[in-house]
Image (cartoon, rainbow, N blue to C red; front, top):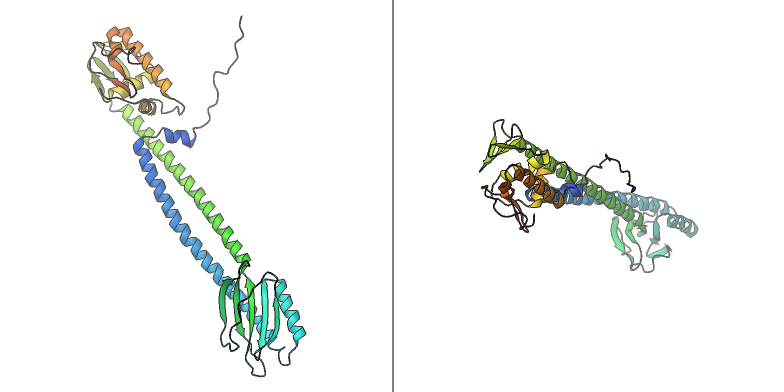
Length: 335
């Protein structure tokens, strides 16, 4: 006696994936999904663009204000060390700034440079402004091959009344990195939300289509479909051929009912899968062929010529003909 593998009769079926659900959708539902998805993506892109740009503006403005206050505080301290000039104190304070986010510090008094400390990353520095500085100026710039920074010039209020200024460069690397990370986080979150919304739309469209099919399958209580000598009673779920009962399984009944909706119309295998196997996301053309074969067999058991009621249209699908004389031979048309 040969050995036969013991396979469980009932195996848990995992829920259908979005790809499977998408494949089961009709062409009109796919078009609707495409429009909805495009609208979601456009709205998200506009919203994210506005939000990111606003965030960057606020972040840059806050950084500019803090940096300007930083330079003003140093200028206020430096004004006490320029009359008389205490170069050692100024140099120590300037080097302390370089330990932080400052890239360079210059103090000019009475047309002479008192100190000029610079970070090694600043290879080339633009010429200083005119000695006569009356207002605070802030410029965003970048040296060739160096970091981006804010060039802040603050008037130096010395006790001897001589003109002068304090010039400080504040590294913007931290704020640029923060802006970039925030942008990536926001874009990633937006795409995740879009994906969730599109998935929800897919499930809604698929559920709506299933509900419509169920409602159509039930139909009114007295609904009867008559195609030639074939009669389908939807209320009783019965099929009669020339008055004789045809015994069909639920799937076979659903297939015949689907074809009888529009006699002589060719239904593709994909359409029949969508109509009949609504609860089986893994059904395919092989299931349709097998079911058609069994329905023909059941019809032929009542009336042999009735086997030709379901005609195979090679390359297109199947149709139900309105006659009982046998029609096309399903064996010759590739059933």
